Image (cartoon, rainbow, N blue to C red):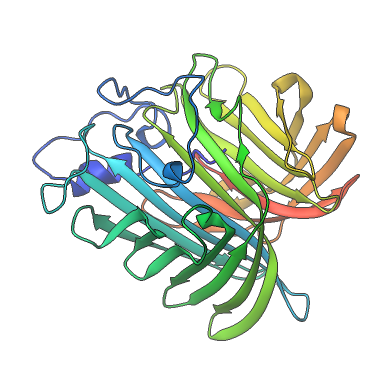
Length: 357
């Protein structure tokens, strides 16, 4: 799903302290009304490469990459890179200090025994962060997700770079596969009341490069997944958080699932089945059995780090285990995110994100 972490509250803080912050509604303020911004409606026609860039008029969007990696000795790692764009108002972006956009970057690496996360903040309009299309380049400070390919197909070959005191990585991501529109042709509904985002993915990346953690470098490779979403009000005020899965099956198929937890009532559950050729099938709650099992005490919270997932029509019956149950993102808006292993009817690997616990 990649609702992913909003910078709504951070934007209000960084954008100026002379205005009181509104009462938070929904997880991280994502349920706040956004009537001045552009609504998300069904039937939008996506346009590439233009939709790889920012979208004026929408309140929040992100470029989100996760990678499941192994080194030459078979040791497993996860890498995450995210750039969030948050608009303080619905007007088009302008250069200079009058710009009303806040940018936030998250990066993390995970092994079975270690997890490190870092964040960056920037004001728009002054060159510190942004996304350009010619060539495609998403950046904040020296963290970059930049194209090495043609302007017509910028996601065919990319470089992904992040570094902090305890970790760094420099990865090359390549794919010749088509993009995947999530939900109903890119309209990804998040509630029965109609909250939604525009959402597409590239789940067929192959990643390779160097990852360093605690001073030790590793040559790594493995599958990677890009999520792109933009919205104005993606949650209801009643929704407290979500559990999101991106899964690479060894059969060549991919699965994206999420459940939006609520203060009252059953979670909103949906997903997408992606076959080995990239064809998609929308999954409804009736198609999925998603059950949290074992929990762990993580940062003072009880969190489900083992899950069972069944999709009977696809003969999928698997168990998901966290590579490192301690993959807590101890950032301004904290959450859990890390790589997972799959066992059961299908082997594989993937990523799990859990917010609002």
